[in-house]
Length: 332
Image (cartoon, rainbow, N blue to C red; front, side):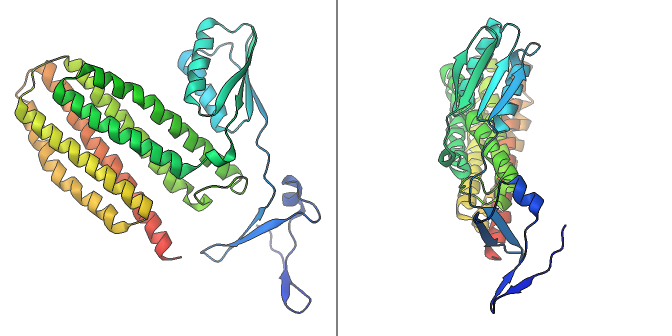
């Protein structure tokens, strides 16, 4: 930390000089404009008015990268915030091109703009105004809510097509999740670079929310996969009714938690957390009944009840985030 003295300029204005290294790093010079924001803790934030340019071009060698390893590299460079990135190899194989095209779909705003025998160039066409965290999280919630409800419905109705559709929808959740990570990463680097619907001081809470929602989507997918494993196995109606009740309670907890986050309402968040106790007795009853079934039916059903339980737990994590943000808001 640099310590600088406050100077009196004229009769009523206080001034303090800015570190030259900081100003040079951000491209500031004489007559550049900066914004001043007073924070709740009494500190003062100084932010340049000019937008900082994103990193222009990233280059990755993919000679030894295939399938999931190649996908992870593309995700990493996407989240890093490069406007354009180039994938190079001595010769790009057909299976690598397939992975690249599949990943380009998963990365919102990214489009293939150039292909040769040994390189692929992908460009980010997303405008800063579309990089809104709350908007992406709301979209994630809407998709996930339907995924969880339909995953349970596919079990109750023994609907294999619906279960497969739930599994496919997980890709849409992943797209918005990665977009949130991209935006939050940009905020951590340059919180003043682009207009955002959240403050930099809220980025951790919304990161935790996005992670919890992504985990809920994974468990909805897991339930759907368990339905495929059952493949028409006979499940007593009494157990199905209890699973339906437990699933409905998970959706209720998730909805209450998301409403609490949207409204920054701690009472709604506490209501979401309190609903979990009602669900525990239902889940315990299901698990006891499942023990009497044949293993090929009992194991998938146990997986289903475990995932329903985890959906509620991750939703409670969101409720706790809502409480944290509500407390901060009430003390501002």
